[in-house]
Image (tube, rainbow over all chains, first blue to last red; front, side, top):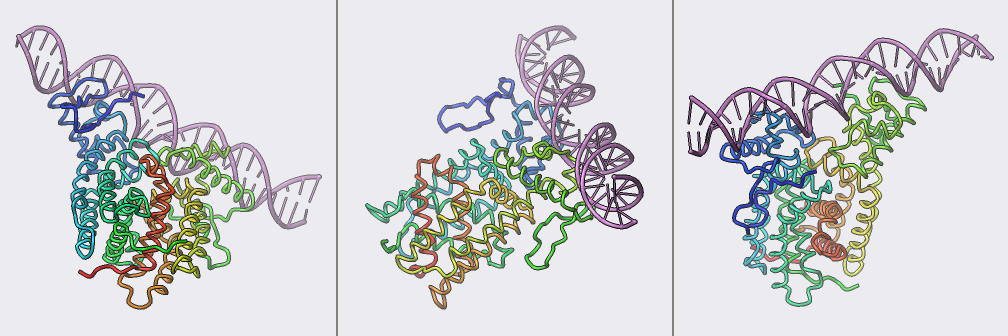
Length: 227
Length: 227
DNA sequence: AGTCTTTCTGATGCGGCGTCAGATTTTGGT
DNA sequence: ACCAAAATCTGACGCCGCATCAGAAAGACT
């Protein structure tokens, strides 16, 4: 299968990531516009249709074009989803600012944890359909999506690991990256299963509190008995 | 359209949950056997095929029967997945024993947390494909699967919440159910994205350590500064 | 206006879905 | 052991989405 692309931004480096259509040619104004329209309709539909039921036909119908056109710009359904997710993953990098350079000790630390949790919840809320699919396909084991998820959370994780090192000094008794990864990994989990908690009569505000505590503890590393 | 069922275990109560076939009749020996064979082939295939690509035809081919037979016992693909997941979810109830009645303070508490983490990892490992799908469809928002996931984790969560209450006495400053729910919710997340961590050069053993710490803290509730 | 390039589409073969009506196997009464 | 009735299975079918191609339509350039 062609390894072609749809990666709009492979890495902020090269000036113009060519963005070729499936047949290898570089689309012009009109082409890019339809491509964009297809992307938007995909996002739109993701909000109302479960992943498994999302058909290429649905997207093209919504975009007012024909199936063949779709295949001009995307290899298959997953490719368009990947492109959508890529865009969102970049947006997510902004969350790094909620971590790096924040105070993490004492009361200010709790405030920082609060801000992080709230920021993440808001981020998830405003991109729910896309992030759901990203999570889905990455759980599913698809390499491209798993990689993308890692990249998305990578910035936050590294930032948080750095903060953990700063707070706990040398010889923290847990690998800071592992702790950061666990904490950051909790966030999508919590945001994603929000409905689950409520179906359970646990007010989401309480879950938020729990998350804040866990982050605070994770960063500050209270004493744990030796074994 | 028929709303019928295929739920083998609607609730542990009534002696014989009838288990009707789609046409309303009660299957006999032979029928149950084929039904079982279909279930087993489904599990088998889940291990090698991504959810979206799993076709009814694949299952029937594997079971050496015809598509029509499949529809005799299951309304659709999701129904068979639900049945599979239901079975696994019940198995999961055993994990409650790793929580209820264990010691949670001091060094023994760390040991209990360790046992819980390891037990869960093993549980996940031995049912990976099924649990992946359960998580998947529940993330997807499907009511039946979400409910099932809640039921599966419910026992563990309630048990852990009880332990939290015991340890922290009255006036814990976080809702025990919310904390327990968060901690228990982390477990599938961690087990499921194990590959993700490793793609990241974080040894899974370190993640395990982090999880153990978080559980210990969550149960014992170290001091957190007031704001 | 004429030509070349880009972009779009209708038509098509393939394969899975879900449902019949009827064939095949099993059961149970005699 | 036999046979009718019940249970179970299946081949065949219409429908729809997938993915592709050849060629039509729309733009761009001179």
